Image 1 (cartoon, helix red, strand yellow):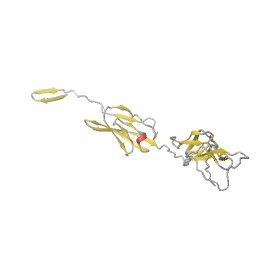
Image 2 (tube, helix red, strand yellow):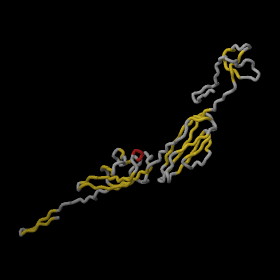
Image 3 (spheres, one colour):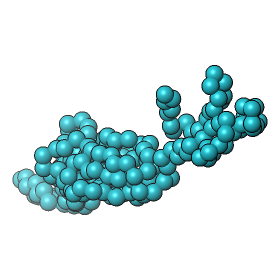
Image 4 (cartoon, rainbow, N blue to C red):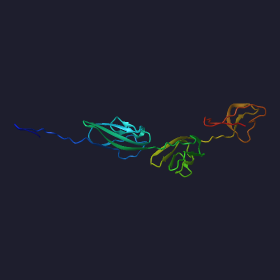
Length: 239
């Protein structure tokens, strides 16, 4: 109210004024820190609606401008997310902190094609402070399963798998799986091209050699010998 007084009297004018609360907001990312395999984290927000999000430093993936983040497509590190809301009296800002930890990506070394009942060593690079856990299908692990390498014997022919899970000091876990083809060992029996009397060939087909065969191989004669069940998994050396 304004009152004006003069020698002629006084007058007054009353004006109503509304005082609005100052805009305010808070943002939070509950559960931080996150492993870099987490696909999506939603922002928890209170207060004034609207505004824009920004992140510092660069490397954290903001999703669709709504404040949600994608650790899986972010670079490990610690970030500050800022929400800025424009008001008639100027912009108002609030911040939240997010940490993304790296996830192990083990690379396994070891054969992926092997003969049945042969032993093989499989390993991943050992990192201090990390833990390891191995599992297998189609074979048997002969050594401790909680180290960066194991020795395995493949008992069953066909398709097998071996898997290692590696967990770092942040509790983030990555896995590696190798598919292994286990083939039976080659079988080679005694054989020759069986001949009739006089050294003539009986069709050139390999036949099992039997003790006492007559004329199985004649001096200065030529013959073709072969092993059964030829396979691209085997190599052959004749002597």
